[in-house]
Image (cartoon, rainbow, N blue to C red):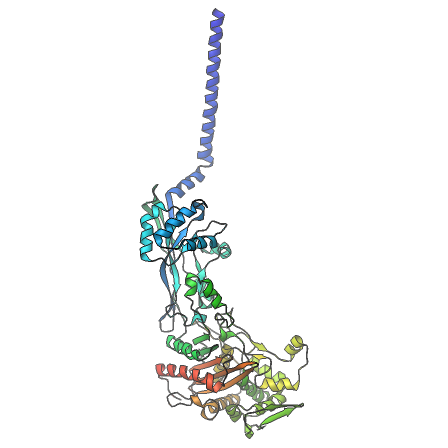
Length: 581
């Protein structure tokens, strides 16, 4: 009996010890776990706790404005509201219910919400835009119901606005939302997934100046997501305004002047500094389309065959008779001809069994009159004697065959100089005298951009300096090309005679200062001809150079392009009251 009691006591003691051991093990495990949580992973869980308690509310930077030379606004920013969903908070099963509530609440078609959600899907879980440009009443209705619309949010955004629509679109460019690939590269530079970046024109070139820096508030919220207090505040830093060299009134005139052609370009420039006063290209586009994102139909229209997004001021075209200025420079600078040299002009010119017509025979004439009447047979004979070396050396000296140096480097084109080396390499053919004949009047394998042509006229106007065109005032290069004074005198006399008694008498108007320039009509079979006019004024002390171009416009330079130039000169000299000398 005693042993039995002892046995029971021993068993109870063992059970107690076992239980204590179990409790000790669990307690030790708990203590160890607490130690790990507190000591090893404490910082991590504190961060998670702060994430639940502390919110970062980003503030968009306001993009800098683009202004014309007088401070008038060309591009600014506007506030808009968009509807988003956070895809990681809305499962496929939850989406139909949320979608239907949003559709009813905000009067948005269910199909639109489904389409935008599907189009915006991404592996990274970035939020998806379901609707843009919400009306104030839509924003108010959403915010009244926001607490029950988990995964959806309405947020403000700052979009680019171009108050003048398509005016100067090719110069200003446009902005659009950053892509996921770009974000991966630009995040380190302070960009956010909601950022917008310049895609073309000045918007792209001066992105770093215009964009500004993000700011935001660090706030503490309660379990319901309501803000309790502000822990930190960093104001967004706006981008800097950028004043361009463009003149808004002259730009408007240039855009209106191009209404007479389906495709074309106009460049107006200060011949002394290279400042661009107007630059227009037709057809054009409205950069506001890219702020909200173009529709499928709008995008299709922007990519139609006549290429509205293409800046034709930087595209090469046959220069036609405007190239006779270069041929004149080559002739006089080579020493093969003198300022008073005379060359025979006839109704046609035949060489190697081929005959080339002209629009008039004037007998033996000099360079000024040859420019004025745009005699082809005069320049056929000059080109044949010069040969390609002199001809293309003069063209390159005047900036042809090279980029202009303007800020829009992605668009700036060198054109084409189809000289002896080019023909051998590309066509595998030798140069012939016939090539010299056709090149001398600007019809060979030559392509010159309106911007390059503006530089040529500026060099004649300013006394022999090749300027660097620019859209923002900055130190720019001026290259002395060293033309003989006698060469400049012949050119200036001939270009003035083009207006007073030649192919551009339309510009010989008393309300305008003395204008000098040259017409050109470029063949482009089987399509209609191109029309050119380039010139400057006042002829005695030039302050304005203008080149106007009509692509496949038909007609002549004097009837199609010269009226465009007249419109711009009327606007400019009326506004600036420049002396008519």
